[in-house]
Image (tube, rainbow, N blue to C red):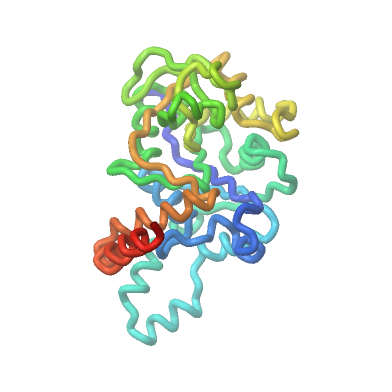
Length: 295
């Protein structure tokens, strides 16, 4: 790693309204919807913990206090569990909590885009590299995506973007990177384009919602003009940073579920349930029978 600063902090932008999941998200933040028996946000935080992240910065919005409460001790619940000798449940809850003083929350008062959400965390991150994990995307692999990205960062010293391959015919739906020479478990990024016109994409590698960025991105975002959707786009800021710093892509080869969409959320529940030894035996055959009955 040499002179490269360690990636200690991670930003989680959780201010979105979750309109695709109304009416559920009228009262429950979309990040708190459960995949099997854990909120979506817990899977993303677990990925960051596996990668060695030590401080967790949540950029929230109105009505997101439930997320703050979730990452805190709930005295009454724990007291009741102790009285009922529910030791397994107590151990489970304590194991999910980050250490005291390692979780911070700040507000994104206006919905001005991902770039603006990242900028809102600037004072908590300071002058050091940081991870950014989009909370809608949960991933399944033997080695977490962010862990692999941290390893690539330590090898290369570059900004790192998680990428996956898509059908070339679908490239117009994503942020796409241009591929350069191989670097570790990935490659050098020579360009980026957000939702390129059909037939113009420089590759079929799309950005999957995981990033490691140097703090210089904050100064860029401070003066970033609004782009697509009248929002401050992170991709625009990264393109400006690419002109002066190296970027590498980490090629993630696991499964990714977009839990910001109903189909991805349902598939995530099925996939994570089927890999659980305490659940699969009771749901696998009923699922097969259900599929057969719906033909």
